[in-house]
Length: 435
Image 1: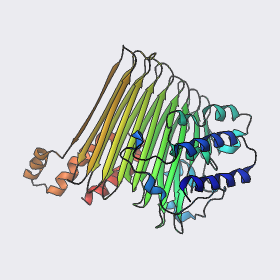
Image 2: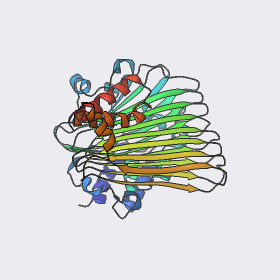
Image 3: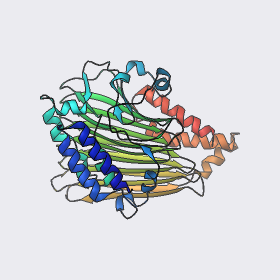
Image 4: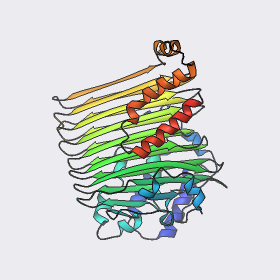
């Protein structure tokens, strides 16, 4: 049975189990798109350097019910982020939101099942207007597959004028202790006018089986709202992941993002920021540190639709052993987006002769009164810096570690949540100690 037929059987089963719901139409349209597009191959320009098809060769357990795997307290404690007792914790298990494992500590935060929000008079219009908007930018079969099987998703709402007093920790857990797991978490978040929130996402695979996480999170940011979004990827060497983060700034607002990728066999990140209102501001930071035979692919897109917007993007990479990386950053400036300021930079350090990096910064400008720049570098550690440190009695291993820590600091400083920044610094220090 080929991939399309396999998912067709599961999709028919999903329809029979869930009857007539508010999400049926969007599911059906998405599955039709998946049937046409299929799994991307290297012939697809956006997937030219990332071979995703091989990740679908494993025999995955693909649950299509709302049931989630059983986890005990020790399972969660092993992956919890620092100071979790002072955070809102939203837990996905095998792609399904688990209220039993989740804790809401902020009264300003509303977090309910996505299916419930789609049928609720208060939230129906929000879900209808914004769920699935990412498909306008991500036209491949992977994004469509997630939408076709929306089940057990979550709707997050921060009310107008409210500041969420605790950060929102989102745990994406694949329980592969007995079977290989295909998980497809789905989130729609709506940050209301003059509201503020901090979201941190992390990923973990339990057990020795293979996991494939195909995640989509869509975030809508209203006028005068502020969003800080952090993603931490430090999964096992038998975990594959495609993660799409789609942020729409529909009012004048501020968005700050940082993506840190330290683990996973194959990781693909799609980050889209759509500046749909006058005078929006967005900052995109990324750090990836790959080793072994791992692969990281960061695709970013900033679409300037309205005038007077500012975006600043800096991604830095470290690649060792036989690891490989891809960076593809696009900045669009639409005809009406005069007075746009957009900056993009990608820098990479190769620690071995067998590591490789493909980088492709892009600008497409259709306005004539803008300031835009982009650039990329691929190189090695500074030999003069290494020599200087060694001449001061520092070992070659310690010298390399110090230079790499300094190199990463540009990104780490952009993580404003102190516990999260300390956690990531610790993970990087552990990695550097093994080089």
